[in-house]
Length: 267
Length: 267
DNA sequence: ATTATCATGTGGTCTGACCACAAAGCAAAG
DNA sequence: CTTTGCTTTGTGGTCAGACCACATGATAAT
Image 1: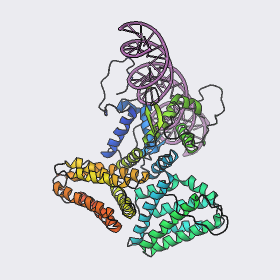
Image 2 (image 1 turned 90 degrees about the vertical axis):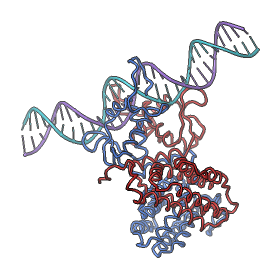
Image 3 (image 1 turned 180 degrees about the horizontal axis):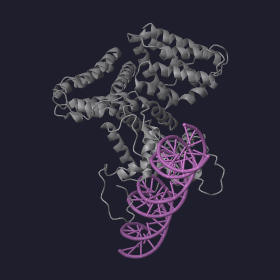
Image 4 (image 1 turned 60 degrees about the vertical axis):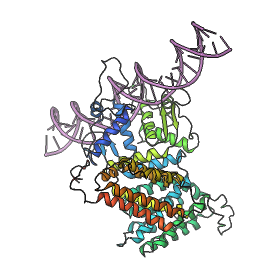
């Protein structure tokens, strides 16, 4: 129940009364979540217009909008202005966007240390490749392969290479046909994109590193396709830890060809 | 520059201009993210008051609020009314809440099938226990153990038991000291809480199932403490798959069928 | 039949006004 | 001087109303 009493007679409260302490926008969110759970709302459906929803729930339009904004940020709805069937708020349930935003912002706010992100990637990705290698009708890795050929261009700027690298790892996750895993992998990788990019700029010899990464990618794919789960696991692990150790090494200054490969990474 | 031209002379645009298509609230979000990245804002800091922020960024207060609502939903800030040091919007980077909300809502909107959630849990949790078992100074599992004893009460209602079960699995994740993994585990488990609970109600013999789950929990902990990573992995996997197979088995269905399962997924 | 114009419905935004609340300031009483 | 109680101030929370921009569909003019 809103605070505004302004002057109108003390109204009661509409059926939408959530728990006492709840704020207006939360009650809107809860209502929508409830309608989703009962199937009253489903992907592809339109939400009622903001003004209608506000009237239905007896809250101000701004409160409705705040709830809608959250849904949009979480990737649950898409809004469009104008008129007709494509306008309004439509339920789309696009897992990727929300997960990415969440992880990216938490990293920015130092809620998620970068090393935890990397470590989680390790955990997830080793599981993914092992599973892919173990699946009997070997999963299709066509998209992974095409990304590898795209990455084989020696003249590729490091930024473009890394973007393709991200897509490669996400493609690996997609091969599992698990939407949650895919969303998480995309989010994990994207949330540290800027970190990775900054690290690559500090490398003494990018061409050399890129070449190594290409080999490692190929090796992972090969292991998966040959069903060597243990090997796939080891390779993806070394691939990830190796790269992060390289870009987070305080040195890298030695400059002389051979990578000094100092101790182990921080954590 | 906002749309409102009303009539005042066409002014220019303030420096906060994000990309052309961006909406006002997005530019606020971007600005705050930027300040987080530069360290201008850090956990514990207060955000400027809404009205000030609106003036600074040359947007309406409502747009600022929409951005803040997103940050709040994502668990980045906490807001409080009143005055003094505890009032206002404070950056708190609480990873758990946001991840939970995201997963829960996506499950509700059918963006994440329950099956994928469970599968992801499997992937993550096997990795977690394996790692715990492999870590040399064996991690402290005191909180896990105390949860186990709490769960050993035979008279515990299934709802309470399952709540403790959730905490047990999250405690396992916490033992890794990885905030991302912990947040994900909590979110994964909580997002299907209602599903799990509904399933337990349909079981033919809850007491029997609970007893088995207790044994399995104990077995997992034992394996971890003895450093038997392979065994820990297998046990946690069987524990999870076993339970979900049991509650999703079409058996035991006939009678106590319930749950807000709407007609059919239609499309 | 084609084209141009207008009406309508929708999200996006701003402004201004309250309310509720918590702290800090301040004044009166002890 | 301390304590008590009121007032002020600053903050988020909410609402109401007003525009704008935009896409569509209906209608009128050619």
